[in-house]
Image (cartoon, rainbow, N blue to C red; front, side, top):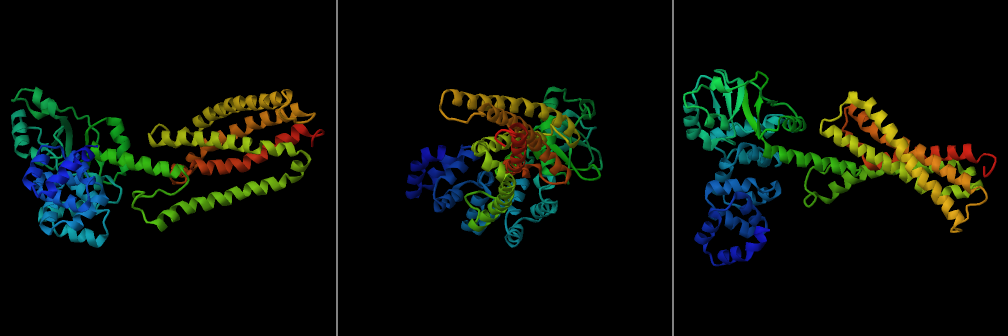
Length: 460
């Protein structure tokens, strides 16, 4: 929004080559707003804006751009400017950029870093992909418990500008092992002569460098902190992960889950930039699987061909029956997958879920079954459609089948995520279309068996 409003003014300054005024326009702006402006102007003008920004501001703005925009700018900028930005970037943001690049390009950029920054970048990239080690930054404030508040504040003033966040100060021993994390406000509110050991309470949450980013997200939810310390296998503090990085992880996880729930593989890259053939491949795989699954529906119908011929009226309600089961199953799947993602459900909770969804399925089935029963009866008595002399049996068949199909769909949809989790697979893969396909086949079997039981001797 900001970029579109001020775009004419920015363009006029660029056209007039008034770079001094352009620099002054951006000097007092938050980096996020400058990044928004840059994304709203043509690529050649993006490079011009970056050239007039101070080095520190340019690096901050660069961090707010998406990886695709960052790569385009790196290719367009001068060598000296690339070197300056890469060395000024926060280590965690730089790691996010480097891991998205081809290995050869990443190695070239790493060679542009200073020896110290190169050591940090290499260390972070050495951790497993999608681990906490790839997210963390080694820029934090660490103090010792025998320091006074005055010593801590003096140290923060001297080194605080290099820290990712000043919300927390980390207390370590002589070997670097974490003892506690203390909020900065505690130091601001205590006497200057108080010792750090008098302030700490040793109640803190921490992550391990090899923890998955999904696990880290759950820990952040539990402790509700702006930052969490990251430890190695020996308990040594090696970095911190901040909440802004967790927001990116949460967005990525939610995007992947939504895409999987839609019956496809996660794209793993923006929709606007993913190559056509790769997108087709990711979408076609599950479509083929679902299509083959739906073939079983035709096979099931062939098994009841004689019943359909004798009571053609039953075919009229097939879409109603199977869609109701699929919809109820999709609801249950979505609820269970989300509860698993939030840590509300674990494998041991499966029986509790079965019991709850069994009751829910019966209740929902009775509601839909009652509506279906009265719909057929009402249409018959209002002479909207003639269902024949056994119309009340047809209504009873549809109503009873809806109870069974909806109950089965609900239980199946709730249990599939548990089954996949037990097999070590992603529960989100039990997507709504997959559940609907499964329930389509079983729903037909339930429907026609209910019809055989109720209509035997009349229509059948």
